[in-house]
Image (cartoon, rainbow, N blue to C red; front, top):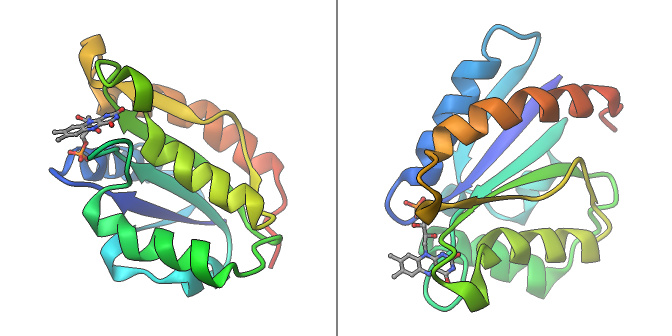
Length: 155
Ligand SMILES: Cc1cc2nc3c(=O)[nH]c(=O)nc-3n(C[C@H](O)[C@H](O)[C@H](O)COP(=O)(O)O)c2cc1C
């Protein structure tokens, strides 16, 4: 099985989460590749296998700067993503009560609009919680991977 982690980050925390997941999943019969979102355009969703969006939130509930082009392209070009299966690990801070975790939510909303199907619930890490996002990811990742394996990757 192939899995592409797409990382939206401003100060690297989401990238740490992706690294942790790559390590945690490394022993499995799974090919994981991490791509920073500034290096991706909407055609990235033509890749084989599953996707995991790992993104933080900035500004007033915006996606991080490195995720903007990808997000805008999805909104503008509206490719058919009905073959895409994905998960969302969002990073945010509950002190931004009005826009908590909107980065992950924005990607989740547009992917669903374009026909993609989410695997599992959208995760919302809270930077004020005292729980490290990498730790939360490692714990959550096990269950998500089990769910993902039940899904037949559409090729
Ligand atoms: C200027 C600024 C704006 C932020 N805006 C939001 C926000 O609107 N909603 C939210 O949930 N978190 C917000 N955050 C919190 C970040 O998303 C959170 O700290 C995250 O862990 C950062 O991850 P990163 O290093 O991968 O970018 C903001 C943080 C900063 C510094």
